[in-house]
Image (cartoon, rainbow, N blue to C red; front, side):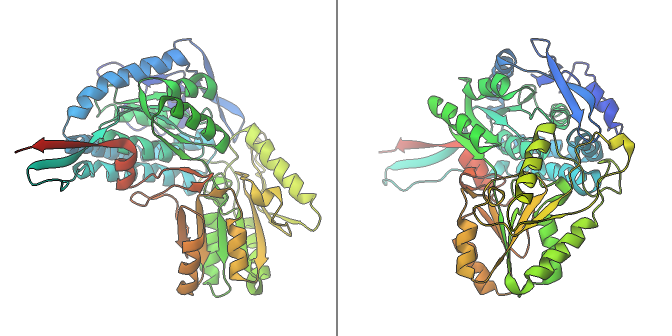
Length: 503
């Protein structure tokens, strides 16, 4: 339990700016808030206004070493604790996070620009659910008895790996942090998390809240830049497992560094997820499913966004028109306003990248750009990173907008006539994270589902990541799975064989 004073309020705080200020310039190491060893910090900017709302501690190798050393010391005792007791403590953390759900939702809306009603509250609720789910799995860390010889008792046991280094992105930082921290803790590991530069506040608050329950040093949080803070974490000799969510390019760097130490690594590296719509689908449900699948309310900033939509030709024109009208009706505005459906892009760099894709698409011969919704008129938001969603038609399969992950509110809708041809086109991607099929012919749907090159395929729905459903990609979308019991066992423990000769 914490026994040192800390600057953040004990009770839930619904004044997001007050809480952001209190979190400024701090890591959480060894059960307490500490500033960066260098004294450096960097700005946390509200993307809806362009205003600085807080400072984040700028971590370096010294901060990493302090956090990892504390985590390594704590891990010895944490691993000795009965697994069900560890799970019970993680379950207590879930209950505390539920109490603070609205606070966390408002804080994440402030720092990421995600709409409170449609996005941030959803994420805050799912985070508590993930900790609750894994908290109940302590008793499932089971081994096996192995038939070897009549006079030999041979069994396997599951043991923790040690200190886990976790690096998370900015789009759903609380959820993706939970998917790494919860199973790692229940399995008997301790964790050091490096937050995304753009979104360090809500995850830092979660870390402090959980440290009211957990022994000091079990869960530590650092902020900083990738090369100065993330790289030393991956390379630290006491980090025995690395789990990373982010870009393919950075994932390759992380994998190489882990390989140099010969430690296991889990990578979730994005996607270019296809959505295939057949003419016999439940049309209204499918249009609504496309809105959800594309994550327009999150400005398309999702690894599983349906940024390639293939529609059978008889319903193609109607589908495009209904999609255009539905997105056009969405309200873009202040992320903290209850009327807002769509928030902002996360940063100026991402804004410019997405705009460049849109301009390239508009200049392509034969392409049509359907720009939807409307920019907010509030002068307080004039510097905000708001971008109108765009639905493209008329692009060919070799277009960069079809092949590359945009991570913005841009989708491409293309017609198809033949199921085999659309399957080949859907699989023509370096990515393989998620896909969805929409048809009332389950024979066709299941056949294609088995042949789609993706780690998660859904028929007539496209849910976000859920606890207890294995999540992870193939091809360049990554290595390993998250969100399930099997993921906890395979990625956060190792199997030891013990043999007793009784002859």
